[in-house]
Length: 533
Image (cartoon, rainbow, N blue to C red; front, side, top):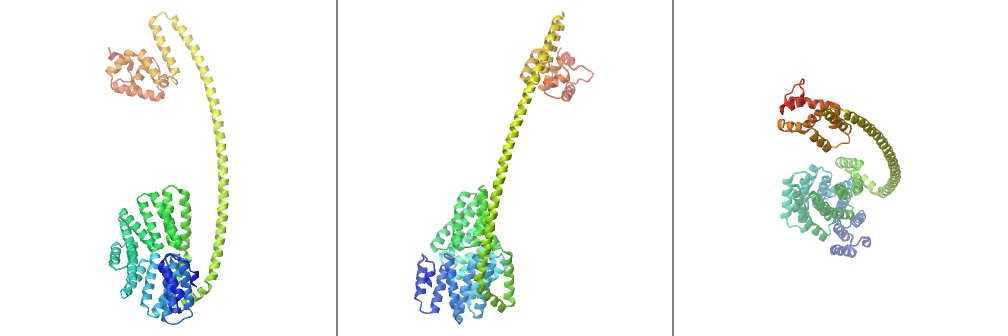
């Protein structure tokens, strides 16, 4: 029988295998098988389950308290495996059956183990009140026994429960008890892990990381894959808190690898959720989506509504009808293989539907991408057409502008001829200034500010000197407006030169009058010129 069990590198496991082969009686063989299964519990889940199931097959044909005690112990450890894999209803069934047996034969060790497991079960369900009650009962029983390692385990799990329930002082109290007990380094390292959690709560991340990295080495040496996976996860979480995301990724990957080996769905759910968030923070959105889908898969397998209802039913059955529950358990054992086949069939159908959905979604995405590319090509075509229309409009405007320039030139030549005919020098000078200002107004849209200022400095120098010396509070734009007014330009012409509206020019003139104290009936230009006399 033992040949079917997976080989282990651990020397204790090898010795136990040899002991199973050499056992001369069923009672001795069963004891060695249970010890071997417990040794492989954290490193080889499948082999552990096979061994315990073989033990139950042998015990079914035996009578006596010794065999009943072994049966309860096997059920307890099979319940641990079910709980880690997310089969909470099966786990609770086995724990309650084990409690029935141990209480019936008054097996204190078995009762302590079962109370401990029930405390762990309710802790995972976040029913902390029940969890603390069962763990405290387990401690009370174990304190009367000689297994210090087992007592330290219950104190440690009670510390974890208090921590999760945010009762930190109580958590520290039970961690201190574990560290004072003469238990193994592995057990103390797990208590140290809880202490690291407290450091994390206080944001003392460097201290916490140091403890968890030390625990990684201890867990590897002890081949405790569950604790190893938890330690890797905790280091990743701390690096994430320190925003050292690239350091966190390899630790998360290692945590997932170890959790898969022991098929711990609860750990895998937490780890994939953490990895999804981490990749989202690193802007690796595709990886984040893949990890989130895996988290969802594990989460759904654990939090099935029907399983929750089943748990409630089992609790009621245990309280009010233990005999009926035992019958249901036997029926469940007989039909478990059929249920497994049915479950595999359902999973195959679901996977087929998922593959079909993904294939169809991929086709839709390709179609959407093709439509997007087509729309992009059409957009570029429209842009090109708009560019051609714009260019055509610019050419038309250029033709119109050239025609207007020709018209202005012809008019200007006519005006010059008329000015030449004037005999009075002063009239000619005034007419030339007016003509220059008019031309400047017509070209306002293309004349630069520098050209305008240069022109005014030439034709209105004396007037500008008066403004700079007598009215220093005026802004440059206001002085420019007054200079343009000396050229005889109206509001419309000035608005073109200053690139402004006619109403804005009129408002500016009103403000200037108020600044220099001239009412609306006075000629503002004459007033300024008289001030300079």
